[in-house]
Amino acid sequence: MAYFSSRSGKPQKGAQEVAAAPTHSPPRRRFIIDCDPGVDDAIAILMAVSEAARLDEQILAVTTVHGNVPLELTTKNAMKVLDVLPVQTPHFDSRRIPIFRGCASPLIHSAHEYFPWHGLDGLGDAGLQDAESRHVESEHAALAMIRLCKQYAGEVTLVCLGPLTSVALACKLDPTFPASVRQMIVMGGTTRAKGNVSLTSEFNFHKDPEAAHIVLSSFPQSYMVSWETTEQHTVAWEFMEELLKQAEVSCSSLGTFLRGITRPFLREKDRWRGALICDAVAMAVAIDPEVVMSVNECFVDVELHGRYGRGQTVIDWEGQLKEKKEVGAANVKIVEKINMDRMHEMLLGIVKTATALAKDPSNLKERVQGKTEK
Image (cartoon, rainbow, N blue to C red):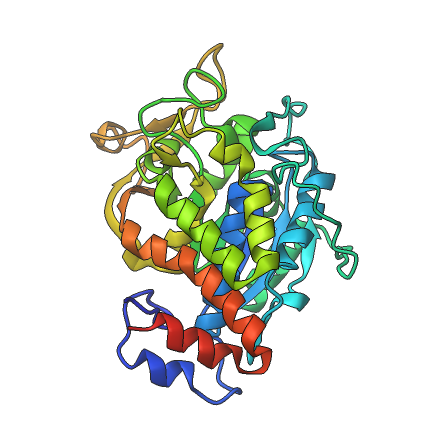
């Protein structure tokens, strides 16, 4: 099993000793999650919370943006998700992760229609109660991103699971913002122009093509987990059902939550060979870079015009633009293949964290590590 070093993202020996370090040592990594929950966002957030508890890392913020449902609902949903695993370690307390509200509409054009893939409420219409114990910070998400990434310059992994509107706004408000980010992970775009909301564009980029263009143009390099890549990395229905059963047996509240929100996905069994949880694939890449088995480094941009092409990801596969000196170095690492066994471990880690929490919240870290390390 791979473990992070504090900076390089490479596997590190002696991970147990690092995890058991005194509480005054700094957290091993810091994350900001920009999202539009969304069922797959919810699962991705739970993966991040579970891994942060196990490795004693820090989630600096969850920021919300328009996307799967309107901003009001994505924000409420983020609060609901964070209430599912109330875990605490020396550097991490999921109950105190601040939530910042971001952009309610695209930068230029009006918001597109919302698609009921995740239910009308974004979480499978499971009838979940609002998280009354939480509140939303008054600071705008874009400003919070800038502030936190400057405060922890070169340490923050920014994980973008929804439309890139707020991130693009941060880039325009402070052009030095991208340089302060340690690593950028984007779920979005296409590699073969196989669209899922238009003929050629993927949902997140289609929602705000200008924002996607600004972000890809501003960051020196990003990891992109495309629609086609997530299609190739579905979670087998048998595994998904076993995960839900384990959750129901080990922690009834988690089981009820997961069973409720995944109903729309389970209804798609005849359409897909497995559960399509796109954002969880991107989160796996963020949590453990060693999960990536194949990448292509290319110059990538986003088409902003055209009746059929708006929002399409344009990729210079053969380096033609670079040869013509129209662009510089490759700006995107396109993730093509990941280790699904490792991703399965992360998904099971959600249940193991919930089980450890139910048994002994005061000894959570040791219990989770003891159950997941090999």
